[in-house]
Amino acid sequence: MDIQYLRKGQELYLYLKGELDEHSVVSLRGRTDALIDENASSKRAIFNLAGVRFMDSTGIGFLMGRYKKLSRYGMGMAIEAPDRNADKILSMSGIYSLMPKI
Image (cartoon, rainbow, N blue to C red):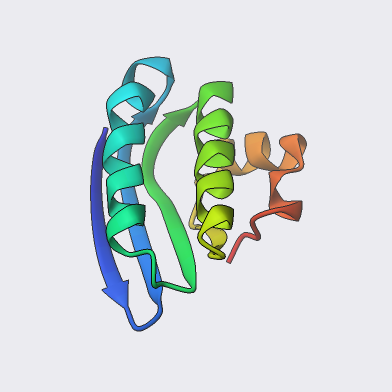
């Protein structure tokens, strides 16, 4: 799993690429948390999932963990460009009620 980021004004964009599963989440969690810490003055983090080829329930847990971390900083969170399969999983989980899809 690869992650790139871009700060645009008050928003932190996190671009994920690869598979979001139990194997990739371990290292991704630390890298993402460090980026959130470094950009704690942002108003919102936007997770772009256009490059995610596969996501399972571990991915939902990863996103929920980042949501909780961002909430402690008073930052919002949104999901951008999930593919059809990821969108289906995210919709069924009800996660869009916490972090909207934009």
